[in-house]
Amino acid sequence: MQPTAPPQTRNTAPPNPAATPTGDFAYETFYGAAIGGATIALFFLVLDSIAGRPLFTPSLMGTALFTETSPTAVSAVRVDMVALYSVVHFGSFLLFGAAASKLRTWVAAAALGPFALVGPLFVLLTAAFAAGGLLPLAGVGSAIGWHWVLAANLATAVAMTAFLASVHAGD
Image (cartoon, rainbow, N blue to C red):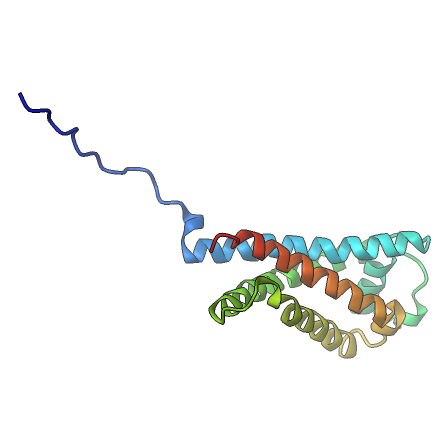
């Protein structure tokens, strides 16, 4: 008697949505945004805490964005402005997460190293802050200190790039 082959079974497992290009993009956007937004928020929380005024930077940003107060006139932390600015901050980082995911795709297609993304992300973050600081938030960059803005943007670009590099380490 000849052995019989096992019956063929169909794979009935649902597809993994994260394994699709759309799923990958959504994953990279969401987590890249969370890492980038958290990095810059923590950077300024530590900096503000060392200066003895925790949450001053998001309060300053919120006050400049949502009131007529000049950034140079802001001296106290307003929790309502911190909350309002936090919504804008994390919403903005969703856009940065999407941009980072697309930039990573282009960097990979150009066969550049995974950390070649740091430069373009740094430029994008700094340009977005400068545009925001020069238009609706005039004086914020000076009030915070441009050197701190640049350092925070660099730390954020490195963190987002490291996340995307780790996600695509086996590519």
